[in-house]
Image (cartoon, rainbow, N blue to C red; front, side, top):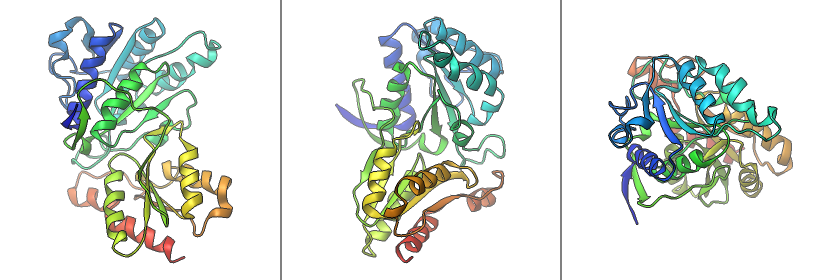
Length: 325
């Protein structure tokens, strides 16, 4: 039965249900046990399973290194990076160990681990705690990058990620934690590697992830009043990408706007644009448009932080440019 649940509570419920279902699942990270996590996501788990909720040292390398070893040995660790930005500290463990195990051993070994990583800007966390890090990882075969945008997706995709046999980086945008939506009470899976057509349309396609999906819907409502029919695609899994759904949508509409938080250069939107140019260039009625953050670090100043990030006006302007090309 569905009921309204916040994004953060949906993740917490998924963890509880998977811990209950599978004794090989355990959590680890900085303050994730007795305290329940810096953002409160792991609350209640230590009280039920004190032996399966482990506080670690302040060392991302230790957290991910331990997770890799445990996963190879048959456990299913769910590690928390308090801020996704700190993936740089454990990059070698994630990229050169976790991502390559299945390939190196010819499929005879797996690394079924989840790295929950708190990402994105918007709550004045400054330079080292506000970045969108998915482009840093998209070039790594063997990693899965999950990016839920709603509470329903958060619970179902986390359950799917925990049950998946490959290492998954599970991105949780800070500004989504308090958002609410319908979430079934029973456990369920949301399929990885499959995009969701959020809204059907005929004139232009908007692809948006995580917090940017909200901007896409707001822009679509504005454009609808101007007679523009918008199709909205939520990729859900950023890598490996569901190319088919996006390509079929753009082939239908002939126009594409990609909305991403984070710098434009070498971002998620660049890969989508390149894919469309390579595969269905002849279907395009206008150049692909990217709506992104500015190519600068995220500032602590609220005014500057808001200034560098995409807005609804930026999305609607990009769509109008594509429509009027």
